[in-house]
Amino acid sequence: MPAYAIFCIFQIETEAYDIEVFWSTPPSESTESIMDEIIRLRLDQEKLPLAPSGTVKLIHNVVNPQGAKLELDRNEIELQTKSLFLDTPQIGGVVGIGVQSQMAVDPIRSLVINGILTTLLNVVGSIKAIYKYTKDLEYYATRDPLTNLFNQRVFWELLGYEVGRAERHGYHFGLLVLDMDNFKHINDTYGHIVGDRFLGQVAATIHACLRQGDMLARYGGDEFTVVIPEADQEQIYMVANRIKESLENMVVTTSDDTKIHATASIGMAVYPTHAQTPKDLFLFADNMTYKAKAMGRNCIIVPTGDDVVEVFQKSSEMSRVLLQALEDKRVIPYFQPIVTTASGRIDCHEVLCRVEVGGKVIPAAEFIEIAEKLSIVSRLDSILMEKVFEKVQQVGYDGYLFINLSPKSLILREFVPTIIRLARTYRIQHERVVFEITERETVKNMTLLESFVVDLKLEGFKFAIDDFGSGFSSFQYIRRLPIDFVKIEGVFVRNMLNDPKDMAFVKTLAVLAKEFGIQTIAEYIESEELLNGVRSLGIDYAQGYHTGKPTPDIILPGKDGQSRLTR
Image 1 (cartoon, rainbow, N blue to C red):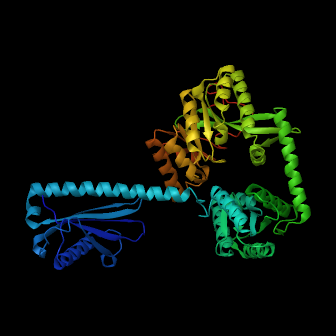
Image 2 (image 1 turned 135 degrees about the vertical axis):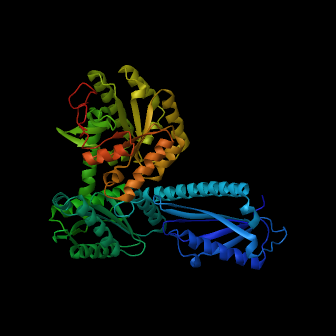
Image 3 (image 1 turned 120 degrees about the vertical axis):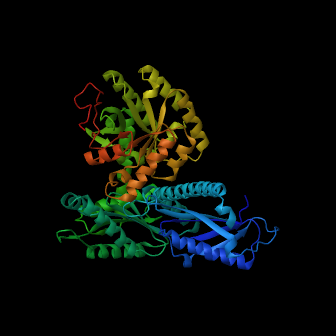
């Protein structure tokens, strides 16, 4: 069935577009002009929410340039079209095919043309929808969804890059760590919606104070970081002071006309004056922020020589305490319950690492960076797993155990034999142990990591990706590794009932995981409404303070009054 031309046009949200028209053989100028008019007329008739047809650029392509030139008048061209518009994702499109007029009258040929257009519409529409979702995933893997600033993982990448660049070119640069004063009071008093609006305005206010090339990130919660390239201490202080004064003038008005003012405690660090590595530089600036808090808040701490000595003395003391705790095996496992959304039953626990120092239990967040610097994370992991397996054997727990591991632990030669030995010693079923791969540390040799994961899978162990959707590595892991579970990044989950973008992102990740045959876990479940929300999306498990806080005890499925959540 001869067809002169075929075209398609799809618009995703507000993006600009052209129309590509494909001809079987070269059209004459008059034929091309007639086709342009017909296409624009059809676009206007479809009444899709696309840009006006007069603003669209038509680009003509010829499949066979050596073919006979087409010379057609308006009566000889019949253009049949089909259109599509989706609300979610917001995609609109039209496809069309140009054939001889008499062919369109033939009912059989008309049916064939309609079938071709339907197929073309579905194929191109699906490709555009996948493209849209992929672009969103790429964006939110690097961005904080509330403020649209860079997220914590990208901050570390940018800081590492800047350290390397400054070392090569021999210049100074600055790091600011900002912690908003009294944000918890604002959140507790006015609610999360006002709190989120407050943080969004804080982000915009800080951004307006920066120079071109300065890098702003939301580190987490109410904490922000700014990397200031090629600047000395005086220039860095000027930027910090500009931020401080702008925040003091910022006002957020609530629904009852209450005026909320903002102040921040700001810590400074200068490379290479105060530290020469990304982690040490952040540690230093963060300590200056704590000092600003202690000195009454709403101030900037410019480091002194004594500050440098004090910070690294504290770091050295924590290193000594941590090494002693490791020697004495004072590693304590805590267990946070994970519920099955369909039944409300607690069938899983995540294992969290704590260290006991002087009668005080210290969470991993307070020592993990120093442990990584000392290269003792794998030893901590081994002691933790032995204590976990011992506890599981004592209480007779047979649910899933989710154990956080650094990828660098997984690739150690002795890791697999150690795990198998411990599981055999404490009679732990391999298929009940789920190793969570985190992005706390990245592994350059992905092939090596893949090999070790496969070895453990062959032994029956399972794997999960933690904070799925928070960085590029998690998508690399799901593509190359035999993953059983993904834990959807809690930042998106927590806000999904109030933010359509977060809801779309969580839904997309859940669908993507299902397509891979992977079970899903939603993190940061802090209310019954949120639990019902993730349940409605078909997410398999839920975890958060609403479902249970971390404790030294394991809740046994079906044997404890707390083992089932009230729905």
